[in-house]
Length: 214
Image (cartoon, rainbow, N blue to C red; front, side, top):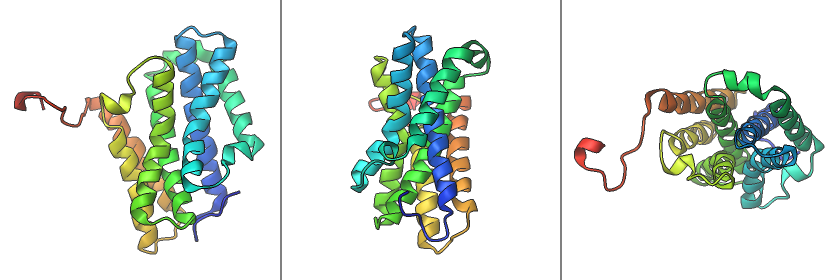
């Protein structure tokens, strides 16, 4: 297991990583089912989407990816793919399941990414950027593989919540806050911001838009 921040429970951070992997893998698998991929295609999409954010984070930090060293990541991906294949009809009846799962993955990876960067000696600004990159990576790859413009580039709040969640972790740690609640709170703030963006169609100003279109 990678080193953990002082005062940050390593078991909690591992749980955040695994939950983020599951959320992104399930969103990828459901998107694959919706796109009418075969079983192998759904499994591949679940794997690459679920693992991509963590692998990018670890590569940028300069360590061997955790997802390739711990069997639990592949087990979580497999479980998400099986769940999507078996129960996709029930899951699709819930409101916007892919968006909600994507928001969960975004939140969990942004927080764990920032914490991992800090644990490896990165400064707060670098940790925020790395956290956001690891958070948006899975969703970007899912959209690209399905031939869509990544949602982070076109609508709703996406990168801003990721940056906010990562910033809460980085700032709290630099201020000496070592409570276990910090990463949990940061993930909840990111998740709430993302869902608010979806619910109320909140967007950043569009490039080239007229004043009445902002």
